[in-house]
Image 1 (cartoon, rainbow, N blue to C red):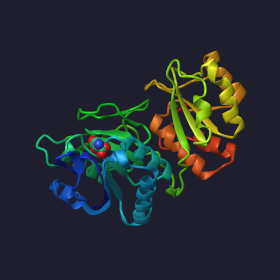
Image 2: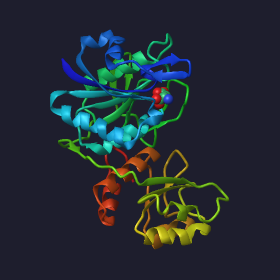
Image 3: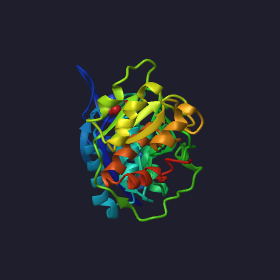
Image 4: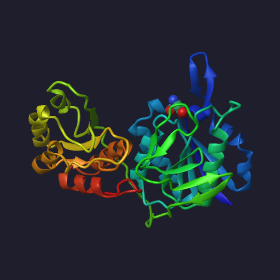
Length: 325
Ligand code: ASP
């Protein structure tokens, strides 16, 4: 029998109705009691890391979760984290960078309906997650509605339906059907795990909209060391902002170009409005990475080094299937 550590963080899965709307309240033991069938294939210990709506999750919580996993790593065969769906993709991506090269499954799950609601998806998702964590080698991943998605590839694409998550620019690692794991991508984590303990909080995101006045990029300068510009299509910057961009780059900020288009990613080399950014400013680009991975990878890379070349190398190194380009 596999030994699994169930780490509860809150979210809808652990929520009850209150006068002011749903709020997390169930303990991990209470969650576990709702899936008695898990006893047939695993032994589970529990820990309550926090009990929050995931709207309130921050990088400090990601570090705390990685710390719990590191502390308990030798004692367990796998980890299941119950988490709110709203920022689950960010936590899954952050854990992919904080716990690299793990072959032990670190599975995040949650639900669209509270576990005590009659039509809940929570019991299936939790049972599937415990099953996957007991059955397969894997890195950090999300198990939701039968989909097993790499931790760096998930994006919440539906706010209400049970199939809330989509794997972006990469296939599902596996599916779980009627309790059977069907694996599509073999586990490619070759190493002993490497844990990181620092993340930069000085990362900001600027989403471009047509007609935004000059000065928006300059206004970011004091607030960040890393700026992600979510641009259009394969990527480019309106002429209007080029001087400010110059200032940001000269001030030593790491600027990453990404795209608002969900599928297929960026390629700055295609158009003049993008090409010049590589030629002249040497900007990084997110290519096919999700926004969640781009944000957390930049936080992680800036947390490891202040040397531009090292930041660039860390950012461009593929981790947990995040980058194919
Ligand atoms: N607001 C909730 C949360 O992210 C939504 C959910 O769990 O589905 O914690």
